[in-house]
Structures are given as structure tokens and as C-alpha cells.
Image (cartoon, rainbow, N blue to C red; front, top):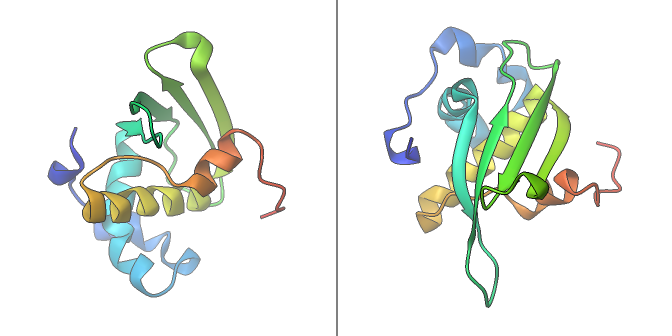
Length: 127
């Protein structure tokens, strides 16, 4: 499904996540939860000076922001290019907000560098 056709989550579903976000992020919360509830996302990792690499991201859906979700990305339809990361749902929804904001700016579906650092375990922060 394209992010253009993304349906916002119900107010009740989004309200559970409100304490985790401030400012502009709260405005994106219903769309981000709607995307989260789909359990998957297709996009392309942009590579400077090279062809973009298509990916499919899938994750387990839960209603609780403090539970962990496992997100799995498979690049280029190749099982050997699969990576997984466990994140608290509220943190993962934050990454989905970044995807939505980036899409609105560039019309391209991709995760942020921060997300890829976590996915590839190169993030040394303890957040």
C-alpha cells in the first residue's frame, strides 16, 4: 500500500501513544499508528551514487506502546539480506513518523539513518 492511501488509526488507538510524543509528532500519530497497524511497509533504501535497493519491512503489531516489536527488513527479495531489530513499540512508531515525514518531503518511502543504525546494531546509545 502506498503512503498516499494511508488511513489514520482511530482516536482511541492513537491516544494510548500520546504520552510518548510532543509537538508536531502528535499530529502525525494517527497516521503513524495506522501504518504500524498494517504490519508491513515496502520501500527503497536510497544509496548515493547507486541504484536504490527495494525492501520489505514486516513487524508484529501490539496495542501497547511499551511492548517490544520485532521489525524485519528484507532487501532486494533476498533472504540472505534480512535484518531484524527489537524496539519498543513507541520507539518504532517514532521511526514510522520519520518515514511519513520523509515521504511528504521527497515522495520516497525509506527509513531514517538512525533506524538503519539500530537495525545494523551500529547505534551505541542506550535509548
